[in-house]
Image (cartoon, rainbow, N blue to C red; front, side, top):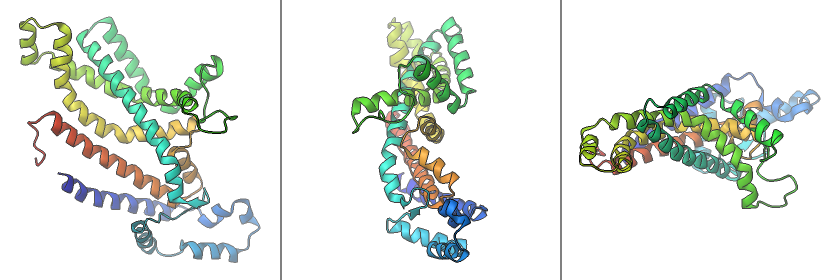
Length: 318
């Protein structure tokens, strides 16, 4: 199964990178002028032409792509024109913070959605169930950046409980774990809340359906406690398709992380991706897009393996 997934990943990564190069070729922005900034108005055309020749941006797109693939195989992702440093250095310095944000938010979403969705299914049609669904539908319609700005306005500016952004205080001379944890409370919570409605509603419907299965009804008939029936029988059956939802929903979680990092000024890949887009930094954009695609493909593989491990009836070669 892993070999088959790897064979599929190769054309997916190739198509993704080709799409990035096609979009870059269609852009009307001149990378040399963008790199020069305000100096482009006074720099001679010969100097700009020399910059284009040094970067090879005047070459045909297939030639540029072949050169980029060759450099990629040697571990060279190019030079970031917006950050003025190698792309590999940008990824190495910032990818960890993005993975930390996404990982914490995903863990919070999974725990909260399982608990809330299960309780809502157990009390289906009750006050808690109706209130939870109403809140989920409302949150689902809110953009993640709006939730972030509202959280900053309430908890940072009005109440003053938490910092409004950044990874550490402006007076900090180092990276203290306690200070970092305090600064991550709002971003992690906002990202988790923005993604929670999908998971909460899915768990609620799956558990409600599982409560009507024969084995659950039989467990109730044997006089087992309600908590045992709910968490030991109904929830275990409902969690199998929940694993698939986690894998398929990861791209949206990563996309939300880009906006959250921008709103809260976090030093992750989200902020540099936005900066690269505004500055027409195509080497950095191609690298971040490719890295995101790799993460999504790896998560889908892990989901398939986890599903097979949770349910022995699933054959990996099917």
